[in-house]
Amino acid sequence: MQIFSQSADAFARLALAACAVLAIGTPAFLMWWVTTPYVTGQFYQTAQPVPFDHRHHVVDDGIDCLYCHVDAAHSPHAGVPPTELCLNCHSQIWDHSPALALVWRSRLEDRPIPWRRVTFLPDFVFFNHAIHVRKGVGCETCHGRVDEMARVYQVAPLTMGWCLDCHRDPAPHLRPEDAVTVMGYAPARPQAVVGRELLQQYHVRSITNCSGCHR
Image 1 (cartoon, helix red, strand yellow):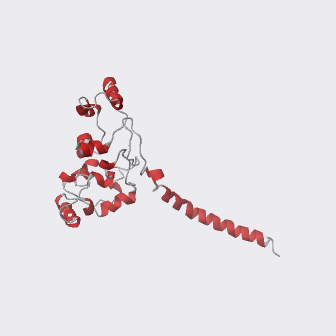
Image 2: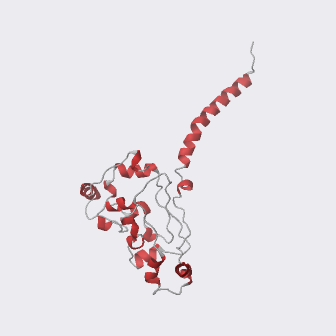
Image 3: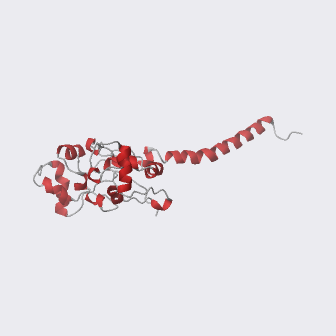
C-alpha cells in the first residue's frame, strides 16, 4: 500500500535536491562574493578631505612617490604625508587657495589631516611595504598608474590568489630599485631577462606558506 502520493514523493526529491544545491552553492557563492569589488573595494574612488590630484603632483610637478609616502621604503606602512610636508610647497604656492583651508587648519590646530584609506587589506593579513620596495616591486604593480588618476582608487583586487600569483612567480614584476617609483616603467631589455637577474641580485624568495602573510 502506498503511504505517500506521487506528488509528495516528487516534492521530497525536489527538497533533497534543493538542500544539496544550497549546501554546495552557498559556500561557493560566498567564496566568489568576497572576491568581487563590492567586498575588496577595487575601483571605488574614495573622496578625500583635501582635493589632491596625483596627475598634477606626479606629472606636472615631478614629485616622487617616496617624497610623500616616505615610510614605504623602510616601514611596513607607506603612510600618508604629514601636514608639514604639504606646506613645504604650499606655504609658498597656492597658499591662499580655499582648497587648502583644511591643511592650514590642521597646522593651526595641530591635528593630522583625516585622509581616508584607499587600499584595504583584512586585519589578519600582514603586508610589509618596505620589503617589497627593497626587492624591486614597483609602486604601480599594486597601485596602478596613479599619475593618471585625478582621484586615487584601488586598482588591484588584493585577494589571496592575486598575491600568491606574484609570490609564485615574482620575476615578471621586478625592476631595478631606482625604478620602483617610475610610472609607466619599461625595461631596456626583455623583462624576462631583467626579472631573472634581479631575482638573484635581490635574493627574492617565493614565499607561499601561510605564515608569510598570516602571522
